[in-house]
Image (cartoon, rainbow, N blue to C red; front, side):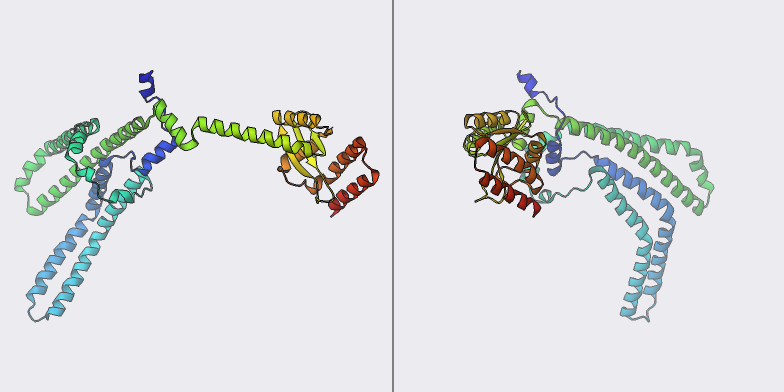
Length: 370
């Protein structure tokens, strides 16, 4: 029984996932961002590298010429240098902007909008050597170490194969001029870096899938955790049951007090019961003293019989009053005529004076017309 209680056999609830997210516990791959950033950086550098290199060389040349001009004042020299630095920086903007946007997009794609100001504070437990050593020996870190070794082997293999397939071209560079050597090295470096980045991205996607699987497994719940969460979010079942019992007792006590005051009980005939009272001297309209369905309706009918309260079957009227009117509230004007007919019947049964009945009907119809 204890083993069953400790087994995580339930999927995580939405509340548990929300709590984990609020604590910063979200599934993400630390390597995915860096690998995608490397790939985009290589692509941007391959496209804008020549432009950036030309701008840097021009900057060095201009600075050298500026410094060599001895007639220029220090203010003029500073302004010229500043202008040249700004011009060179503009050429780097596409690369920097692309890397920043890529970093933000990859982070948002993994975890979505997440703001955790509590993580910015200082936590002494983060530098606790004992807990740090325990984290190093955890299964997650062991798996991360193995994953890192695989990445090293993969990158090393790609670089070695790249050099191996270009070995003849490398040997032929001994007789080539400097420009040809530079172009070959740049093209080779870009291709190898791009291949490495693509391999790392593919490996990071696998890591992300593993992290999400592990995240779902870690959030799975035992029977006890599920019960505790239900108590925390919905309340203790025993307390709720007791509260409902007390509410039922109070409702029954209220029925025993209110129903005997009614003039008539309108029924459906067995499913619904609505107790009405009307005193034209003190009330503007008939009010609902009590209402109920099924067992409560049976309770109302029983109390009415015990106290000699007339029970009138009016199915449409009972349904309308049950749905539209709360206990203690007056009936709607749309039901005045139907209620007046019921009151007429009740007056006849009780043998009350015709003058009182006429006064009641006039008052009721006048309110309906108004």
